[in-house]
Amino acid sequence: MRLIEIFYSLQGEGPAMGRPATFVRLAGCNLSCQGCDTDDKPCMELSLPDVLESIQGRRVVITGGEPTMQMDQLTELISLLRGQGKEIHIETNGTNPIPETILEKIHCAVVSPKRGSHFHLAFWAGKENVHLKFVLGKAPWCWTSGLLEELVPALAKDRVWIMAYGAEQNMQGAREAWDLAMLLGVNYSDRLHIRLKKR
Ligand code: SF4
Image (cartoon, rainbow, N blue to C red):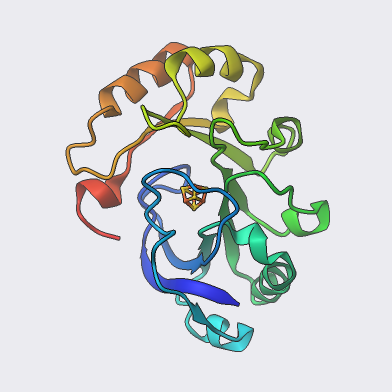
């Protein structure tokens, strides 16, 4: 499969924030968000056994890019990881629904819809193991307070996260994301790896 990197770290954002995991960052995406931190990185081709060999610990976060762009190999990887008893997390932009039989093998899917994309909200919002993470900011693909005030009340509040856009250490916008999360009664996500300059 095509990958950008595999590394062991702590999850810096979302529902598993602070938890150790091996991150498998797959290459390729069907969107082109301004400021994307992965679209210009060189990629490599690795076999599934080589990917499995590189994984440390029991928790695996499959991220991207957009993992569902390699659905066949993704499906195989998830089945193999599940067979090894791993706790599988996936991060997706939500534009490609993941088949139920695959999704049920995943401990936690974090769907981060981009404004203006077709992200199948009704499909994702009905799944117990799916968390929706909205990035608040000024970039064209980010969400505004007004849009989230309309969208979020219909969703399961304990599975909604609001996070500020930004790759700067001072995380401008974090305060606004915090205040909006408070207003809507949902979760706030920081970006600890950005604040601490870790990956
Ligand atoms: S969906 Fe994610 S990986 Fe794809 S272009 Fe947007 S920020 Fe980058």
